[in-house]
Length: 354
Image (cartoon, rainbow, N blue to C red; front, side, top):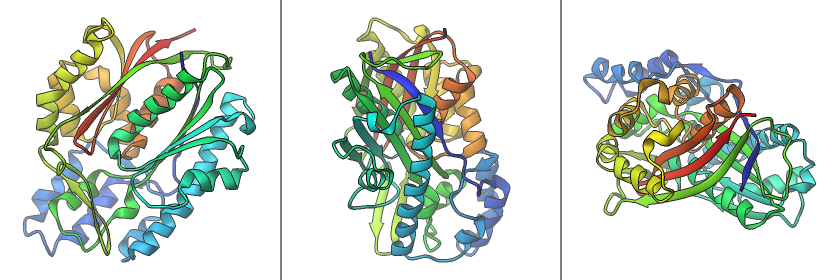
């Protein structure tokens, strides 16, 4: 079965305390929101302490064009992707020439040629790498991309699949957007780059513990296209973020998880490790209530959200990295994230400590 050989994450040098971001939001949004003090309490209820930001904080005080923001997205994404990949390759103890496939997920900027092509060129990776750039999955992209990378490795026992997720959410911030969605987004979203290597059955990994892919499932809910996503404007990418997200989770996630696990003759009580994308405090509460989870089940998810913020698709990879490096319980693992569509993405793992 496809096995996780290594995983790396990025801590940007410009991480900023949530309270500093709160003060910034107060200055930006105060003229448009008469009840600013009440709205600002949103920042205090996110459970976020630090925001992982790719630029020095004063950068966000200035207005930038879409062209300028996107140019920075390409430059920064390329630099930090290379760093994450090099770290991952070193951890896996492989040569870069051994990589057979590259799957890249990103939704916070545009590039053609796509970022994977830029990475292959800069790192001088094998020119025959099979590459799949994926755009538009948003917060669900980490789980969906991990599943796609694992399926590639399952089909080719000799595969060495590099999966990369790159999200620079802060560069999409629009100072001129005084919508509630933009305000909520400014309280949650940050930046992240994560890389992992997944290998086929013919490869022998150097890892002490084993995390293997068993199965995946996607669920798209009809008539929910406006729940989450981007509206593309001349001035940039305007975030769409509905307050109905926790309700959708409460109404659907239990059936989604139960139907997925039942296909593999399992039930929720068989899961020992929960690797969830956080979304936000209300999203986590919806998960816990709908799935009847104990508070400790989502400790890794909450710690990543506290220390980094919501990094869109990259966040769940940071949670997986924490499990991989800090430890987990032998048994089944469930990866889960929600994303634009509106949809849920799930992956079933077998996790074994040696």
